[in-house]
Image (cartoon, rainbow, N blue to C red; front, top):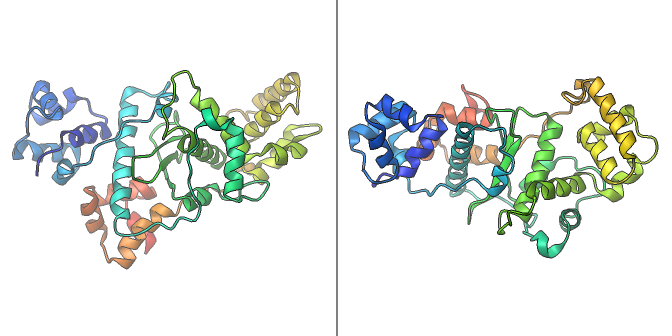
Length: 354
């Protein structure tokens, strides 16, 4: 089988290695490695073995015909504090996850009972109006959404919670043609932030990934407007936030609406329920109490638990009789790394489903 040079580049980026650093490890010039990665020079078996050894991937990974997908525009709009190395690593991680889900899904069928329709905001209306339409289309009851992860999974969206390796990004989404949307969520974030990320990325999936987006469109602003209305519909949250707003009231509402105190305060301001002056006062009070850095731990609620990823692995183990090692071989990955990547467990991660 021919070598897929793009898989070599992805593997190198996944290990946060520059071309120069990897070339030095391999005992070759960067010029030679550059030609290999640009498919101008085919690596021989010896070089392939060295690549596998130093990058800690099986040789079979480099023989896969997958076409890596670029990072979506929405990712670049939120990358300001990310180094190029971190961007490349996250890009590689997401591509590997997309490949893994595609392979695992070939042997099973994900049950979907909520239709996932895309909407061009330039034609339909405001992001808030789209959010209201989605809630109505999915027949979501009024008020807070109890389990947002389960809701997205019912629409066939794969939710993947993992340690992204940095605090500078909460997550992002990708949607490869003819495959399922995949949302990566940073496990370092508290549960309220993870839920906002999910609603934010749902907005990108519905409004942006399938359309050409002008550079002049602020997709992050649109996604935040969608997320606020989706999680805290104006018609439902207005009576709750109306009246004298205090930090104590925000604290009492957080576990009910399962959003942060900060999100509730922002929502109150956006709906005109507090004056800018009083909103600024509450922000100051939150800052003095340290809540802008970390909201009270006693208000934390458990993070939601994605099931689709787990079920895809479980089906192969329990129904098809795969071992951890066979799954790893089928995905062209190390078994312990797979366990860590999807279950945060470097030991017996894949046995969690047995």
